[in-house]
Image (cartoon, rainbow, N blue to C red):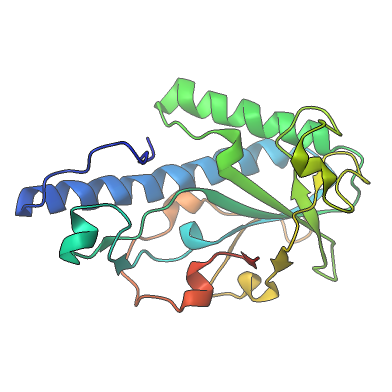
Amino acid sequence: MTRFDDEEPHPLSERGIEQENRMLLRRYREFRRGADAVTKAWRTHPEVIAVSLIGSVARAPWKEVPRFTPYRRARVALWHECKDLDLAVWLDHLDSLDRLRRARARALRTLWDEASIGIASHQVDVFILEPVTDRYLGRLCDFNTCPKGKIECRVPGCGEVTLLRQHEGFRWRSESLAEDRSVRLFDRAAKLHRRAADLPLFESPMPSDEAQDGPWSE
């Protein structure tokens, strides 16, 4: 499970640090298994050209002072805390976003039923790109209807394509697709299938602020 703001961290001790680090690395592994589950579900959809794992889950973990006390107050570095999973998906048309949304939800439910790994649909951010150009088009919306009538739906351009969400002030970072920041999990043309769960968890140097922010800025 992910850490909630009201969840007590392990005590600040040698054993507590070890337990925190073990939990944080386990979450890396769980999100990577989530990426595999969703990608496997999407491979059967012919409009899905390719899928890449991006963001912090795609990188080797690094240590940093966390946001939660008492570790933050004591400036004790732990493994980076992964809070969500970022996927880039290339589609040759946008007519079936609801089917992809429902396939994602089913894959995550199956992951819970079979492995007791809990990842909510809203924790899987899906960035939709245009094939060949890599042009960012929007994100897969979490709502089950479009428009939903929420304040989020008022962003200009949001919902012009059903369930293609736009975010105010959002800027896609094309460098998020660089080889050292992403892992191609599926490529239909190249007949590539790769498991994120097989990626090593070696420590990496602490990335720059830009890399830590994820595949976007606001």
